Amino acid sequence: MTSYAFCRGLWLVGLSSLSLWLAGCGDESRDVDEPVTLAAGERLAPDCQGAYCGAVNTTDYGGTGIGIWRYKNDSEITRDVSVTLSNIRNKTVTIIYTNETENNTIALPFVSPTATDSPVDETKTSDVLTDAGDDLFLTEVDREPLRGAAVNAIPDAVRLFDPTPYLQNAEITLTRPKSKLLRAARAPAIGDERVWNVNVNSKIEERRTVLKRLFSSGDRAIQIWVEPDEFGDDKMSDAMLDKIVDTVKEVIYPTVIELAGASWGAHQFAKSLIDEDQPLALVLVNFDKNRRGMGLLGYYWSKNQFTKETMSDSNEALALFLDTETFYLSSSGYSISPNATGTLLMLDTIAHEMTHMVEFYQRNVLNRNDEVDSSSYREFFQELPAMMMEDIVAQKVDARYHPIRDNYHKNWLWYGVDDFGCGLISFGKNCVRSPYYGYDATGSFGAYLLRRHGIGFFRRLFVDQSRADPLERLNTLLKEAAHDDTEDFARHVQRWGANIALLPASGSPDKYGFPERDEIDGHLPEINGENYRESLRLPKTPPAQLESFAFYPLTRKTTQSDTMSESFAVPPGVSLTVVVGR
Image 1 (cartoon, rainbow, N blue to C red):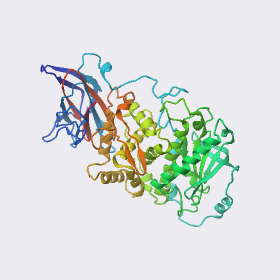
Image 2: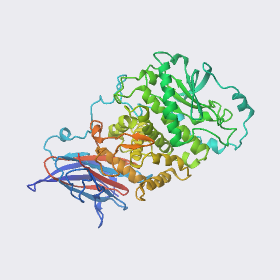
Image 3: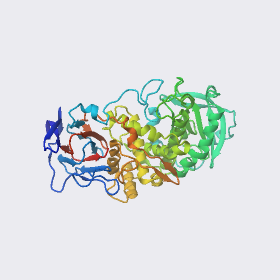
Image 4: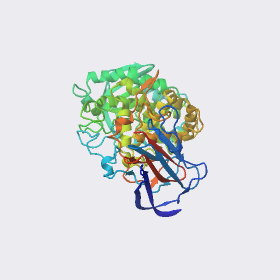
C-alpha cells in the first residue's frame, strides 16, 4: 500500500486533435493501493442492452437513449480503469463508485467531483448541483430541511428495542394466568377512559385518553383513543376521526394483512405475551405539546405486547401511538409536496408502523427468528419492508401524494452531498444526518426493488421466514426474483445507485430506473429522474473511505468536444458505473 497524492486527468479530444487536460487533482494523501493496468480481458463494458440502451460498445455512445457501462474490480489489487467515450458532446457523464462488499470499508483515491472542458466556470455550466439554496424543502415553521417522513423522530428506546432475549427466555405455555383472565373481563365502550404509558423522548409518561371510535377490519377489532384536550373542531375533529376509520378499515389494515400476514394471533407464550384476540388500539396523543407538527409522528413498540409480569411498564396492548398535532397542524405550510398534508403523512405512518407489528408477530413470535432480529443490520432489514409498504399503500390512500416519490427519494438525492458515502445496510449510523438518512436511502432502494420485481417480491419477504443470515436471505430472494444468480444484493444496490444520474422513468434500459408499475395489489407510480434536477446535490469532495454498499458519484461535462478519456483508480470490491444520456 502506498500513500501519495492522486492526480487524475480528464482528456477531451476535439476535431482538431487538440487535447485539453483539466486536472482533477487533490492535495490529499490517502493510503490506497497504487493502481495497476487492467489485466487482459478486463475492461469497462456496456451494462445495458435492448430498447433505450445507448451503450453501443465499450467506447461509443449511440447518441440517444441511456448509455450505461460498468467495471467491477474482483481482483485483490487496485486497477486503473480507462473511461474513453465518444459522441458525448453536451452530455453529462456521471461516474459512480459503488462499494459492493459487505463489512468492508474501502479507502478511495482522490478523484475530482466535477470537471468540464468549457473555458468558463464549471459550476455555472453544470446541470448537476453540488450545492443549492437554503429554501428547498423547508418548513414555514422553523426553516429547517425536512427529514425522512418529515421526520419520524422515534425515541431510541423504541427504535432500538430488541425483543429477542425476552422471547428466548419465555416459557412455552398455552394456559393463561388468572391475572390475565381478570384484566380481560370487560370490553371497553365509547366514552371509557384509559391511561397509557407513552414514550416521549425515551421517558415514559402516563397519558389519559378517551375511547372515541370502535370498528373492525376483517376479524380484528380496532379502537381509537384520544387525549381529551386533543379532541375538538380545530384539533382531532369528528370528521378527521371518521377519515382515519374509513382509511384504516377499507385500505390500510386489509392491505397490510393481505400482503404481510396477520398482525397478531395464536402463540405459545401465554405467560409472557398478551392474548391472541386483543383489539388493535390507535392511541392519539400530543407527544411534545409544542404547537408544531412533525418530529415524532408515531411508533409501534413490541414491548407493549409483553405482560406486566415480564415488563412492568408494558401497556399489555396491541397498540400504535400517533401524534395528534401532526394530524391537525400540518394541513398546509409544508413543502414536501404541494399535496402533502399532516393527515396523509400520518396515514402513511400507520401503514409503516403496522408493518412492524406484523413483522414482530410473524418473525419473532411465530418463528422465534432469533438470528434475523439479532443481526447487526437489524434496523435496515426491519425498515425495508415497512418503507416498501408505504410505497404500496400510498396511492390507495390518496393518489395526489406519494411518500417515496415526493419525500424520501428526494431527500436521498438532496442529502447525498454529505451522505452518499455512508452504507445502505448500516441504516445511517455513520451519516452526517443520522439516522434519518437511513429512512431516505432505504425508502428509495425499496421503491427500486418493487418497480423491478413487483409487489409479489414484497410478499416473499414475509413468506420466507428462514433462519438464515438476513443478507443471505435477501440475496437468495433477489436472485430468484431476477432468475439470475449474478443478480445479488450488491448488484441491485449498484443498479439502484445509477439513479443518482437522474435516470428517466420511461426510457431507461431494463433493470434500471423507476418505471411505473400496475398490479392487482396496487399501483406503483413512476419516479422520474428529470423531476429531481433541483434536488440532486453531489459531494463537494470525495470521501476518504467508502462504507459497504455506499457510493461516491462524480460528473464530467463535455461542451467543446465529442470525446472524453480519463483513468480512474478502482480499489478491490468496488465497481465503477458510467452513465450518459442527459
